[in-house]
Image 1 (spheres, rainbow, N blue to C red):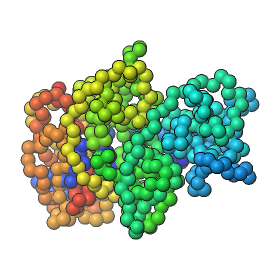
Image 2: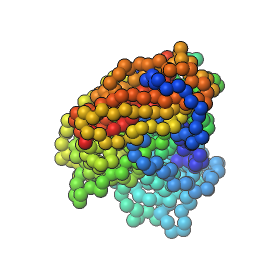
Image 3: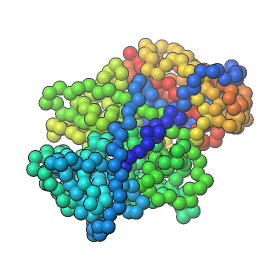
Image 4: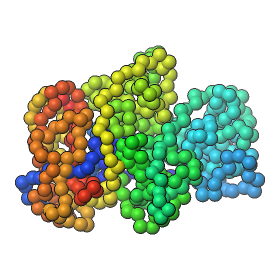
Length: 486
């Protein structure tokens, strides 16, 4: 994995990724007239609804060392040699006597022991890397890659010369990440070509959870670019990933026809899901990367939060298709039921041989892909009640949001709507109509209060409802509320 500047964490707006709430956008009209903007700081409107339910933000991976490898004159091997545009891996140089591997040829460092894993970067011929382990067969060496989620990458033993490796441990083999199906572009569409296997993530930084992998040679349609120009937004098959779009690092793809793509707002960084320690001897799952902790076994289910690399918790069940683990989570901070779901593609497991198949929650409704919000459309100034406020069963309440138009264009009363987008888990909270007109045209810099009457469901659990200011099928300003019923 190559060195990345730390400025890739942004607090901009985007939709709930993989929630059930991929929606057509809505506005609930209010009787209150627009008011001048307050002076308080504004928070970005979030489109990944429930991901803000918890308090802490995930942290960036540790910074890499500063050694920058230079090309060598060694010949290319007839094997997994890097494309010219793939960035060089920056790895620490072993000290004398430490286990090391010297590249015999220009080759790749992978996220696991095989060429079907993600490529972290190129290891140039003649460069050495610190060996930290091996696979069971001894055909791949694990090497230190500090920016990687677990601090390791993998090189084929066929392409390096290893020394001092007699006592390195056998490391567990990580699961091969699932493939993310990109929507193919037309000949003239903005598009990218994956130079190597690369992650498709839920936001423009390495600490956003990955949906899966875009395989080398696959083309995808580009619908936008990040604010710093370092990530492309690509369209994803929404039947595979509910959000309908994801982010790929520009350094691992080749782009064309992208001169006029729009700048897309950065999703709100997901909150950390603190997981309880498992009991001794229990079946466990340990996060290999930043992973979404969801309300059900699929990418259309609600995201409770994100577990960082190394987080371990108890496994209580598995999905019928074997692609998701049900895990134990705190009832007070994540789920009233005490369970959630994580993808098998991004965790190590132990003692799961006898894990039972458990019933899945009701499937979220089918959704159509949406256009992600562009940069600077709106900010959420306030919300009452705050997310995860507890209500009694069937208790009436009122939710009020104050939004600010931070874009350049006015929200014309004749063109924009407030539109209901969806509810999790398919239980509607609001008691009024699903579409409202704006009370007036909201000019740039003006505030818009929106008030909606709601009733808490009759059964205990976590519930969410999403709305948005919309212009046609474009989500201009999404907003939501998440409640607990106890």
